[in-house]
Each structure stands twice: as structure tokens, then as C-alpha cells.
Image (cartoon, one colour):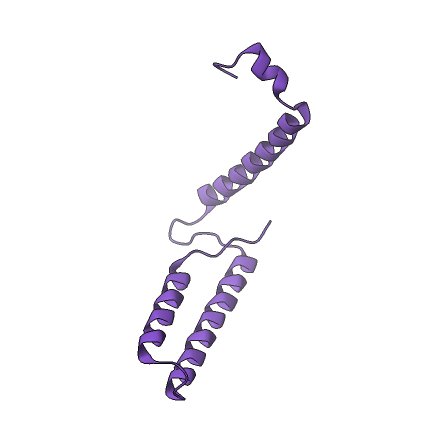
Length: 104
């Protein structure tokens, strides 16, 4: 490690270093696979995992269902308009956040 002393190096747990090395090698391999896919893909169509696409559809359906339920609550007098606006804004933010990608 640049800038570290011998004492600093001695304090580093060898198993932790090896674990981090393994993790970083796996990350590098995954990134290289993604780059290969992107290099070979048609520039107009980005490759996407079918599992990821399915997760996106389920997520959108769940958000839509929550939005519809909020409207039913408002229509039934259980939720004031101001509360509906706040909750719809939160759903809108959630909708724009990218979902987590499933593990490969």
C-alpha cells in the first residue's frame, strides 16, 4: 500500500485482504462480461436480463396498485387530498428510482 508503514501492513488481516481480492476479482469479471455484452449489442437495443425486466414489470404493477388504492381511500373519505398529494409524490419518487438488479 503506497504511503503505509510496515506497522500498518502488519495490522492488516490477511484473510480480509484475500476476501477483498476475491470480491474485486468477481466484480471485475462481472464488469468485463457487461462490457462484452455492450460491445456486441446493437447500439439501439441495450441488452437487459429477462429477470430484470420481469422485476421492473412487477415493481410498476405494485406502484400502480398502491396509487389506485390511495385514490380509493381518498374517494371513500379516508384520505384527505393533501395527504394523497404527499403520498403520490412519494410514489413518483419511488417510480423514478432504479430498482436493485437481481444477483446474477
